[in-house]
Amino acid sequence: MTGPVDAESSVSGRFAAVEGAVVAGGILSHVGSPVREQRDLAAGRAVAPLASRGVVMVSGPDRLTWLDSITSQALAALAPGESTELLVLDPHGHIEHAAAVVDDGERTWLIVDRSRAAALAGWLGRMRFRLRVEVTDASETHHVVGGSRAAVAALGADAVWIDPWPGVSIGGWGYAPTDPHPGADRDWAEAVVDDGAHARLAAAAGSGAQSLAGELAAEALRIAAWRPRAEREADGRTLPHEADWLRTAVHLDKGCYRGQETVAKVHNLGHPPRRLVLLQLDGSDAVLPEPGVEVFSQGETVGVVTSVARHHEEGPIALAFVKRTTPEGADLEVRTPEGVVAAAQETIVPPDAGRTASVPRLPRLSRRH
Image: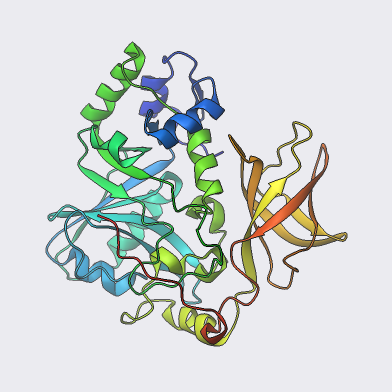
């Protein structure tokens, strides 16, 4: 589950009256059946209002070259309607912010975790210097709705971001060894809509003309696709390599930016200290661990759970960071106040990730439009 947003948010006011809706902390958790909602989202029969997302808008003629110079992604030649994502790193290469990126020819829209939107907008504002750019935290005037590309195309959006995951973008690098990738069939897009379009969506949902899904469903599909998210997988010390984020959010051949030296060194000469895994949790009881609980192997702490969901096909699953040295075949367990939950791991980032000579380059995919 995602963190709380303002209890007075439009989600509380507009979607709480939808039949079956459960709203917590301003977030539409579900509308009565999270399992069915996952199927509807995946099939394009429903959309999910994502109150946990915020929107930062960047305008001005220098916006793309400026964003290119201060983030991990090559954006100077980004075409209108093209979707990508970027990371803002600290000087040591740790992820501070992650943003979905789409430009409409006049403005660049950044979709971020709402809890971090103000901080990202503030940081970008301080980095403007004398360039012709304007940064606006548009989280109060614009809203994000997720679903399949076809489902969100009908919303009258100001911008639509099509998730490039799990393709390997130009300049990127994929560590995950699985072919096909479990996220390959995930059709996911996020629409930025203004307040009027958001109100119309709520009215359609209230009348039964539009099917909705909650954020529990969206999170379950994300986790099953091994898709990292800043609010969950960026804990203040996360390197992009640890979450396989070089795949879509980092251009390894572009010019200098803050944190680039660490990105290059780890990728070419070393190994990230942790690696992201998917945990298949023992589903024999109703215990679902919370993000933040520790992961153990043979009685020793080896990691921490970052995201948890109950998937409509796979059952209880989680994303977790474990020490790089944790054997891929090791039996793991998660300890909760209710008891111990056994966990089988699926490798997302292998222990030998980095040192590119030892990791075969995966086929690169162009960015999706």
